[in-house]
Image (cartoon, rainbow, N blue to C red; front, top):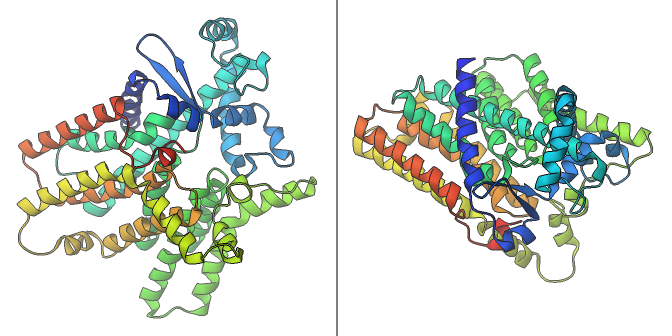
Length: 444
C-alpha cells in the first residue's frame, strides 16, 4: 500500500505540473481538436475533442448498441468510464448544486462545442472525473509493471531509490501525459501496452505460469482489446514466447504446440467475437471507424487494388510520413545514449552490453528487441501516423536505459546528475512544445 501511495504521488506531482503549461497554440486547438479551459490566471486544462464522445458514451452506454456507434470497437473502455463515472456521480450527490454553479461560472461543459445533453453538465463533469481516475489507474499499472520488469531482469535496484523514483517520474511526465492525462482518452495506454507486452513475455519465458494461466491471461488481454486496438500487440508476445519455450524444451515444434498456440489466438479474440455476435443478434453491424473511416491496416489492400500510381510509391509515402512522427523518440533515445555512455565509461572491457543483458536472463535482449520491433512495425502498418502513437516505443527505450544503468553500481555524482537531467526533462515537458518534425502529425 505504501508503494502504491508513493507511485500515485509521483503521478499526481508530475501531472499537476501540466496544469501550469501554457495554453496550446491556435493551430493545436484547431488541428488537434482541443479546447482549453482556464482554471485561473496561471492554470488550465486542455480537453481533446474526443473527450466529449467518451463522456457521452459513458453516460449513455446503451448508445453503443446503435448502428455506426463511433466507439463500438472500444466498448470496454467506455464501460469502464461508465462504472467509475456512475460511482462518483452518486457518491457526490449532495455536492451537485455547488458543482453546477461552478461549472456555469467557468463555462465548462456548457451548451456549445460537443455537449449533446446540455442539461447534464454536472453529470458530464463527474463522469469526466471518472475518466481521470481511470488515467490514474492506467499510469499506476504502468509504473508497477516497469518496476516488476526491472527487478525481474536485473534484480533489486542498485542505484538509490531517488534515481529509480526519477525514472518512474519520466513515465509519468512526458508529452503523452501532458496532452492526455487531463482528458478522457486512451492514449495513456500507449505507455502501458508495451510494458504489458514485456511483462507477459517474462511470465511465459520464465515458466512462472502454466498453460491454463496463459489461456486466462489471453482472455483478459482479449478483453483489453475492446479498450484500444494497440492491445493487439500482446498476441504476438503470447504466441512467440509460448512457441519459443516449447521449441526449446522439445528441440522442435510438435503439432500439439501449434494447436495450443491456435487455441491461445481463439481465446484472445473471444471477447471481441462475443461482442460482435451480441451486436449482430440485436440487428447491429459492428462498426470500427479505424478500419472503415481511417482505413487503418486496410490501406495496404487498398493500395494493391488501386490502379492509380505505383504500390512502391504508396509504401514510400507511408514510410516518409511515419518517419515524420519520430520526433517524440529523440529525447528518450538521447537519454538511452547517455545511459550507454555511462555504462561504457565504467564497465569492464568485456563482456559486451548485449551479453551482459542476456546474462540477466537468457532471453532478455531478444524479448525487448521483439517488443520494440513489433511495436514499430505495428504502427507503420496502421497507416495513420501521429507522434502520440509512435510514442509507444518510448517505454521500451526507458526499460533499456534502466537495465543498462542497473548493470553496475553508480557513484553519487552520476546519480545526482541523472536526477537533475530528469528534472530538467520534466520542466521541458511542462513549458516547451514537445520536439516534433511535422505539425500535422503532431496535432493529429
